[in-house]
Image (cartoon, rainbow, N blue to C red):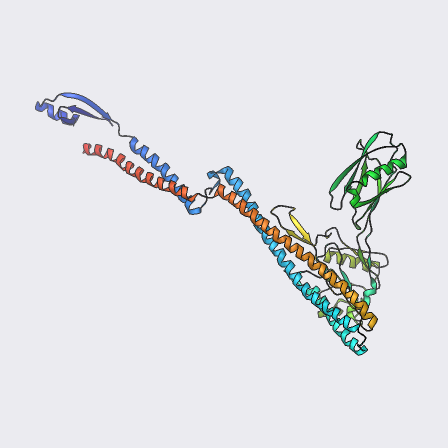
Amino acid sequence: MRIVYIQVTGKQMCMKHLRERIPQKNYYIYTEVHTMVVQHNMSAMNANRMLSGVSSAQSKSTEKLSSGYRINRAADDAAGLSISEKMRGQIRGLNQASTNAQDGISLIQTAEGALNESHSILQRMRELSVQAANGTETDDDREAVQNEIEQLQSELTRISDTTEFNTMKLLDGSQSGSKVQVSVSKSAAGNLTEEPATNSTFKTAAVKAIDGTESTYSVTTLDKNGNATTTSVTFTGQNAVGTDAASIVTELKKTSLADTFDISSDTTGAITFTAKEAGVTPSIALVSQDGKSAAPATSTPGTEAYNKISQNIQVYDGTKNIEDSIFTVNGEKFAYVTDASKLGDSNKDVNYVVANTVDKDTAKAMAALINSKTGIAAESDTNGALSLKPSATATGKGIELQIGANEGQTMNFTLDDMSADALGVGAGKVDLSTQDKAKTATTTIDAAIKKVSKARGQMGAVQNRLEHTINNLDTASENLQTAESRIRDTDMAEEMVNYSKNSILAQAGQSMLAQANQANQGVLTLLQ
């Protein structure tokens, strides 16, 4: 629609009014014609567009101020969000690691508190042994002292068996790492033997004669955890098998390998590596300068110390003393029984194998039962004896604490068995019946006190380390949180300025939009 306006002298009118005037012979001087398009109110549209942008900015400012975050969605800052979330994962991991370390301290304090009482008991036992060693004591006196000793022995074992943290037994030997803890009844004690650990050996074939030039050999060792270490040595050969081997050994003894192995050679040119640590079975490979195996090694693996129970463990048939048939492995009770019902309600916690006699088949079944309940690599032989060894799933970790935000950031410590038997002051080990035996008992108790003191000292060292760990974790978390805050959090002062600016602009935009909308209203008035 077009409306044509005629500008005349002293008056402005449209064509309709002009036609009404001309017949009346009222002459006006024509000066100018104006055209106005009203389908689009461009001023209002522009004001609305600007107002929409300001409203969107104000909405974002409101969101940032209300949430406290500069980044509330990926679109706000895609790269910043990715970095922030990675940092958040680290922060939460560090905070939890700090909590883990605090839990570790609580566990140690629980164990150490129990050992404090064990120390007091041992000191009392020593006091009694000194008393019994006095020549003024009669046999009746020593018998009374022995009765108290027996009660103290029982209490030591009770503390060891019942000290727990979060249902975990601490001092019964189950947290001692790779050591298998086995106990049997007093009458069956003779059926239990401890097999000592042995050292692994590696013997190479004869090292080939080398000419008089300088040669390089490397020795690669692989420890029990699969970590490889390579040590290289350089020497001048003498064209003699035995002499060359001796030269290699001389150079190897100058390296760090000498801390781990006893290294020797013989006249045949063979080199022998004997591990200094019993039970550890690393691998050895001797390689010449060209990368080929210089002398393949034959190995004799070392074994860890383990317990062996003979076949003379009794089968419980309901007529004997049940305690003579029960043995304990890492806190779990086991027994051979002719009829499970004969165990009664008081021994429902006993794991059993039904058998009339202990033979290779029943021993095999018992070994499988022990494995399933304890994770120990139990083995049986043809005579029915059981060998209880550390399994691959329980090799020396003890208690493992996650003290970092990432995989592998752990620390380990062990808690040994602190029962009377494990301390060497169990039944039959502290005899105060005579003056001479009382004197010997004092030395025995001193050894137990020394063992408990060592254990408490180790616990104290671990606790001190954990306290430093917590401080380090808290500091790292705080610094990382500060960095993450700079990326993700809102600068409240800056955002308040932006909010105020956008609020003013929104008000101004609304006013301008209203004024722009008024332009068409004037046109409508003319059309009336």
